[in-house]
Length: 440
Image 1 (spheres, rainbow, N blue to C red):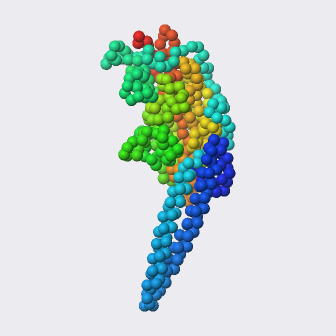
Image 2 (tube, helix red, strand yellow):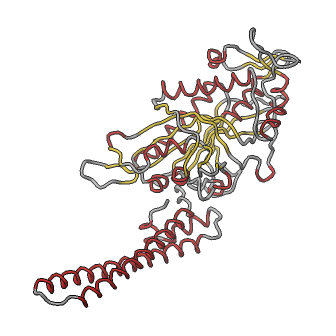
Image 3 (cartoon, rainbow, N blue to C red):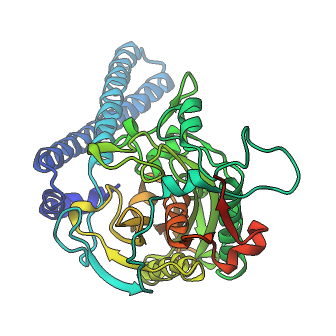
């Protein structure tokens, strides 16, 4: 969340940032927060005054008893004061909850480098490789027509298994829950293993195998709720959420902690399934693997000092780009405009890869800085030097990479008529084969 002290000092900055994001409740929400803050400070003053009165009454009672005098009146007065303190404390707790509720609804203030514009207006900063431009079948056709048949073991009914079986996936769980079989399942596993190995061995991340159910505090800490609670899958009666991204558990590893400056930066990588209800929102194309409710992803998270945040985001983004370069997939880095910026994000680079079969650029990674927004919500601090007051650190994260669309592009880019679907050489040791072949 944003700093309440900064909100008091310059509310117009926050209002202007929210208006640029398209928030029509900006002024009302900021003013409601400041009004509640004024009430909070008034109540704190009253509580302190009443406590001073109670302390004075307690001393008067002690003095009266020391003189052997009757102290009933003083005792009655102290009881009245104590009762009023309880009422004020209850009011104070209510107002503090109101302030927190308001702050949780205020988005992060965008970085000054974020340009104006809406979705689709992003600035292309880097282009790598040459996109394929010839006509290619879409991945849903390729995935159902090509596969890999093991030399031993069980086969699919009627012959070799397809890499992608959308019909049976929908039969099991509904649309948006794809089923990868045989070579498709092997491809998914190979990509996860390849990316984890790369980030651990070459990029220096610590691998984590996190829980896949998140509590409310963890989801709140990263900014996923209350704003996006309707997009999450929630369990009853536990009030736990299926992980929307490994960003949530990795960021919350140190919730409520004070980290030694010498231990920063911290860099974590994890693989997890990701569950999101919002797939296919606003009538977007939902065919095949383009927009799904469940997909696998390898996530990078870095915790750093504020002065290292800018360089840290560049480094993290390069680590994600390195995956694409090793997979020989043309990509571009896009700086998102403010109208397409996430609620908790200060700045975001999207990495997009070209899908020739569907004729569009697909996002496979978002690399973002959250400044101290998530750290403030999660109370993750560091001590700059021994004896210094704790300060909020900065959090960064990025997909490296998301598998569903990555598989889309690998199928469509690797397709050659009459030869099947060939995969990049770097994956061959993980796959155990080089290509998918026709199963018809």
